[in-house]
Length: 395
Ligand SMILES: *Cc1c(COP(=O)(O)O)cnc(C)c1O
Image 1 (tube, rainbow, N blue to C red):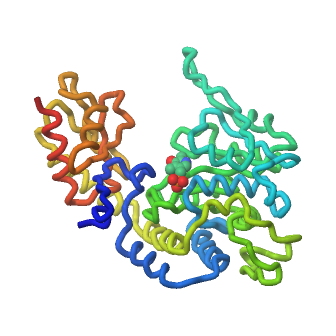
Image 2: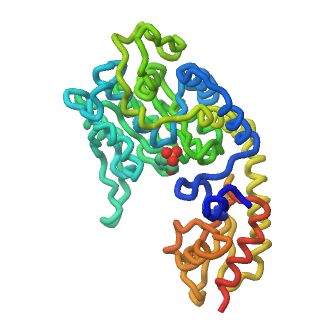
């Protein structure tokens, strides 16, 4: 009986991969044990964050870092840091950004649901570039000169969403932004693995980068990382910490928060709502160490073995062709044939509603494809998935 049964909640087989809607992935035993142990002590949160910063700096090559309650929280606090700098008055006033640098430049084709986290600071997005995909040729997206042109005295940051096809290249965007004295904040939530990407975006010129801790890193579901320039991280952490404390009492590690550079302590900032518990910080650090310790070859071999087992278990499935994709994280795809008793979306929905519930990846159902990711699968899930899929594709 699982802990969820006790509360009348079913568990599911997550074949979509670590997504927030499906509760992320699951923790390795040593990450879970670390969180349990961390929960049995108390620490000073400023000291905890300073210690975590050292680990994040080592792993990312950044000057400093902050464990956040997710990549989205990192985007919110990173944006806030770019707007306020180390000014406690501005920190106190957010999300009222009057008389502050409150514009964030973003390539239009990179707009997505998560940019709400940037806007939540009170910043206004300034979109540049026209991703022409409808007028025949449609080859252009945004170009670096368009970012330069959009910079004004009100520009707080350039926001960049890293991804396979992101245009223009980050290094070009960083050059344009830095020439105008503007920092670049990168959303790299979903850009792991490879683990080398932990360093890559900062090396390409990002001033701040946000990663999700609950996705590939394998940390607690509600965790993330914000890493980057020391001053910006200091501005972010000051807007995150609970600062209901006398000025004289406040004694954070100087290399993390340099009190001498502050003219006063802000009240609770906009990031106070993105609270991170000590268990989460420690869980993230242990997961991060584990994630970076595993070679990409090993990761890939582990995932490929699972997918090959699923492929074998699905042998002889009706009305679908089975395809295994290439790459570090291979996926198994079912390409449904025209005569299939169900559409791809119907198959996904039936799988979710049955017992055991199987959540596949529906992102390509419009092309008749249902995908299965190995990220959050255990060996014992494989036969269960096949046993659910096969009857649903039979008349
Ligand atoms: C998942 C994701 C986020 C949010 O990450 P959380 O850790 O869930 O907050 C932000 N941006 C992108 C591109 C993502 O894929």
